[in-house]
Image 1 (cartoon, rainbow, N blue to C red):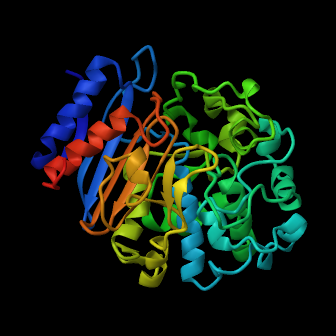
Image 2: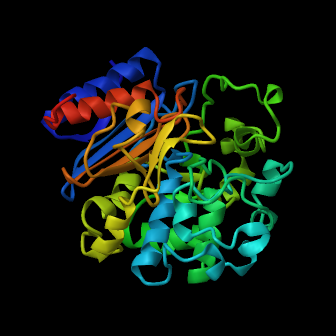
Length: 385
């Protein structure tokens, strides 16, 4: 069996064994899992390798690109500004970013960009990844018209959610999203997480291994459809995560680098009522805001049943048709392309995260994600697992 290191409370031995089995089978190359219960890390394990030749072990300090799990950190940044009275979730985005009012977006609210319901789920007209990395991409979002009536449905803001929230963070704090996360979240909490990755940290990054090809041929779809304009522009390419330009960019929807421990450290802020080890980031009222359902039905971009609150996916509603294995109750979450995930279970005071670099298939987590989460909740004695 593959070697798994770190700390694991004995009641989660089966979860550890599951990770060992996935590593031994080759389904997993390198990964980390962390669980915090009521402020205490009861699981903080990792194993495998960071390279396909299996010469470099995954260590305690290995980090990797966590794809859309980064969105949870972007949302946390916005919620912090809401708690501080710097941002009103029910105010128009244009109140803080006047240029955004162009072309009928004057009624797009802050909560719309936090719940994928803004109608601005991607870029109008062809755009390259190089342009997405730069400031002109934000200006283009301000200029275009919404693709559906804001607030009426969700359409997953796959690539640009970080650009939208990031500009609002910049306008309300004077800091870029990258700087805000470093100075207002990761720094105070001692979390090993960053938007992008500083060059000094590149040697400890586990490079991304792309998933099986997407079962989508964008060339055969209507180029003017919302899914193509969102997902296919620019064309998805997982290998970009291993490039210098990607790591230098400020894209809080896509290029966060960290590990399971750091995600749990930051997002346990929500699970624990806004306070982590004496660091207060959120008010209870702001946490309640997360659970105000904003969309509950078939998502216009990914085409699957989805449920969104303010900033996060919720686990009760239409999403149960897509991912019935998610824990029910006062729970919010989000997952990254390839399988990474972060779960905030307020009922049980449990924060769970899994990250890896060998990407699996699936839209909300992968088969591995489901296995690990199910093993964890079975150990917790939750019915249905």
